[in-house]
Length: 92
Image 1 (tube, rainbow, N blue to C red):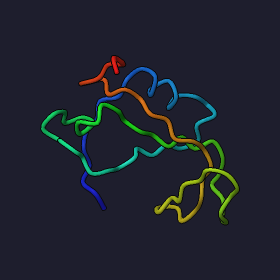
Image 2: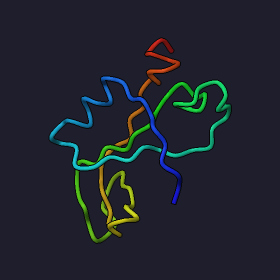
Image 3: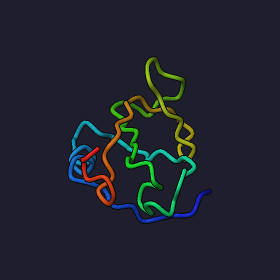
Image 4: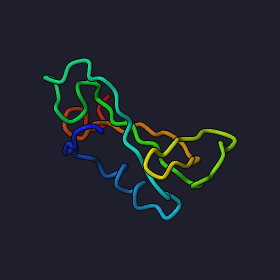
């Protein structure tokens, strides 16, 4: 399991997380190209979030899906990208 870190999120991401259609969400994990540029996004300028709108399912659903390791089930949804509120602030 990866270490827990604190990440600042912008208003658009907060709004999507509060949306009643969002059943669950996962922040995308990836290796940072240059973590010294920004501790929040790792220097990419964006944060990526999978927003689940359906599930959990026992079997692999149609469409875009994500495996939940904790529940051992599948979710459907979409991935959205948000400007990093620390270094990008929507300017890119």
